[in-house]
Length: 308
Ligand code: NAI
Image: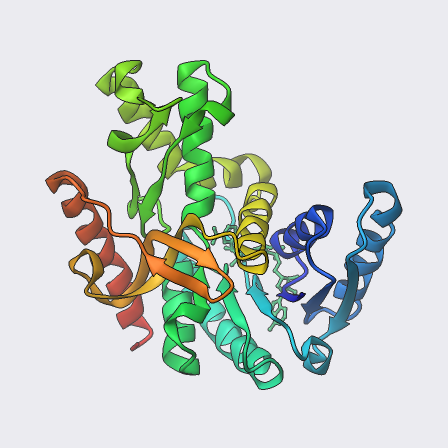
């Protein structure tokens, strides 16, 4: 199993590290545009192999895509990240050019690859890859919901004073502060609905804290987060590489599911060796449907700004 990660920055390197530590891939190739940067990150990570006990071979290259040839899975994290006070949408123009060029180079050398898009605004970047590459829709997947759901579970556990492993919950919709749809109605603590433990007010606070989860970290760190994003991507890569058929909320191209078409947005999907094996349609309440549809509007506006 060969995995390429383009962008050896904060998220790309974290993703490569988690993939290596989980020890399911034979090879990870890091690619960056900054001279020597991917090579340096790869060497540093390889020097953790004997300490962390993994056999994955990590290499780096400054833009030589022949080194990525035959990748089973490619992750795109290249581009600019937001600074405090910026929205993900402000990255649109610059990242679109980068993502378009990178996805074309990846497919040239790995025509059968599955692509995971991370660069923001992620739903629009995922749609851009669909529109410009023509790859089958099961092979282009956006990462956002896996991270937002992890942040949701963290906030729920905090509010409940419960261990995170007892919490189940999912965030669907667009990967933006307003677009996220945390499904509090379906969230559970050991199979018991969280509404049994938390007042509507507390649940509302959990929802708000989840939605601004990325902005809160950007404010604290001065740049966007990397551990949880890297872990979220590595979980998706592992599900595909090991054909686990686990369900993740991912940005997927919709064709009538949830009453939506011609956009990529976060919905639960089954991940396996074919990428998106199935889109899971949950029965949403009227309020959840309305929230998802306004989230879809915002994603479509971004898509339109790129004339997609
Ligand atoms: P970063 O600035 O640390 O790393 C980005 C890397 O991309 C840099 O090393 C840069 O040299 C490289 N790069 C730029 N243009 C390139 C090109 N044409 N080819 C190859 N490499 C290129 O940024 P960070 O924090 O790693 O974030 C990366 C992206 O991921 C951002 O767009 C950010 O907004 C997004 N992100 C998305 C998340 C999600 O849930 N979907 C979560 C966190 C970040």
